[in-house]
Length: 293
Image (cartoon, helix red, strand yellow):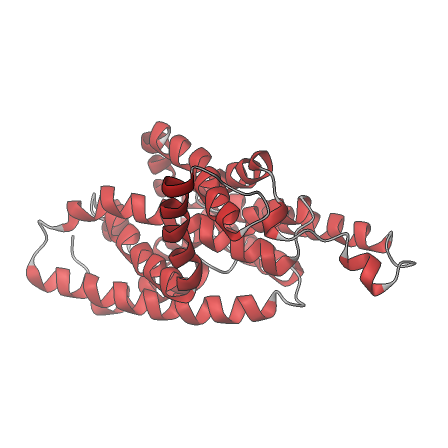
């Protein structure tokens, strides 16, 4: 695989930003190389492991940002081993929800690995899926607004009661949100977007839905990294240095993106990301069809 510095910078920064923003990192890493004429890179057997390596940088950033949650995660399993008890509604329960929520995507990812990887050679299809992703974000936000409209006659305290904290989710709801994450196995669907929409569907706040989304994505990324990154070890030393540079850049971009999004979702909505997906998906689809790709 011939990897240039420019390709490293573009793909790493693209991954670091789009993995957390609900606009599909895999979709962008399929579409952008196709539009840029990087066909040789995209056709390489090392391309997917390369992208997964940049995902690894994102996972490290998420662990660093949510270190308190992951520290609690470790404490939870020590507590369960000692007391053999797990209280619903506690922070220990949140750790358990993360475990349960990763199961659907993990199982489906292993079962459908080969057919899903073939989508990396279908950038026009991925662009169309990106449009569908935008539609899912728009509909999810519209349904939330409809619910909120029913609460306008309530006091602020009464409205607040209609939003559920993450600690109140049942194990079935956690697995439902995790199942929504599975859609991101298809390039063009956003992992964070689908899980946030599902989180809104079970009446979490935007901020809690985003937090749960980012926590759910971390174990999946780490598992994929363990499977795919070793396939890069045969590459020349100069290429491996570029990969390491990309991992670092992706991690920095992901950390800054996470900090921005957690602040944004205190009051922000999914609509702007839906509009972006519609525009980027449609423009890319037209361009790819015109180029015969």
